[in-house]
Length: 104
Image (cartoon, rainbow, N blue to C red; front, side):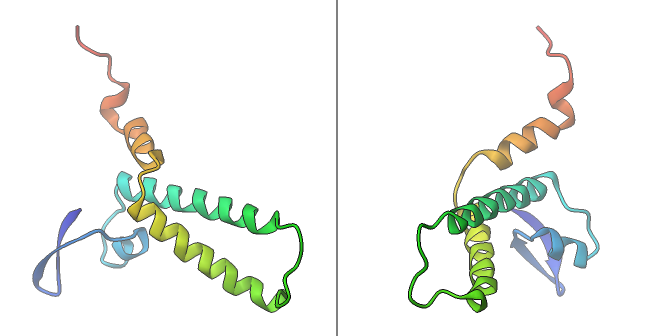
């Protein structure tokens, strides 16, 4: 969580990358990790939808954009609420202190 002043008042809010850019700040490494985690989950959900065995009674081409939007919403929610570890691994990997030699 990052503290930003929004509309004159203090707010402790976790902004998305697009929201951070909109208020004129650079996205953090943690936000980039969460965005990657969301993209990864979205690609998994897309692959699961494509792997179905048969068409349902109401399946059609008109339904596909709405399924994609639903998958996007589910992946965003899952990336915010679940701990898959991808975000933390990306943050650790790209932190400048990660590559410094360890003192013994």
